[in-house]
Length: 193
Image (cartoon, rainbow, N blue to C red; front, side, top):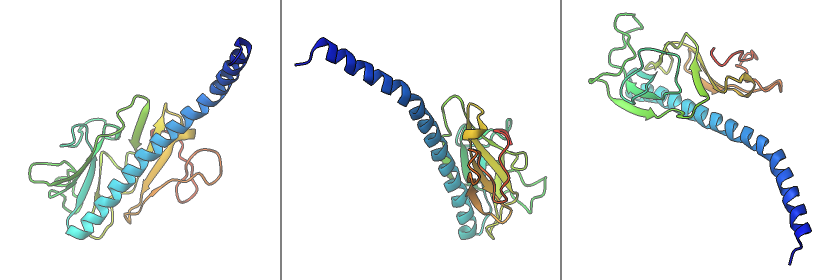
């Protein structure tokens, strides 16, 4: 058996280890959630690009809170989720016919439920403006940046970039400061790019 003193010493050591280990475990969980969501966004964007080339039709991805239509306000807030669809209304990027909004004549291909956790954000820069379209040659209608954060902490952020050529890639922290960089080595400076 164990004496009361041995049990108290064991519990004291266990509680000290928990107090030291729990905060770092929380950081791991936050980082893993951000990386998982970034990977889902990258996969969605790469899927849209490949479908545009395969189907020879423009494919759009837009922020969506109901998995059936694009958001019309807070266009740069993607944590609500997104949908991928055949954009039949897209026409050479003209402002009158390029809507990026799924409609009854536009086939939905894929949807994501978003983060669903408080404190987590997925924001795009203003060039994305609520949606991005991949054209039949694999190019995107615009370049853009998506930044995934927790509690607006850019030092733990994860970034996803889309080039005009249609390349989709995750930012890497090459200089070891904890902040992801684009392909030119420029740090992401904010959780709201």
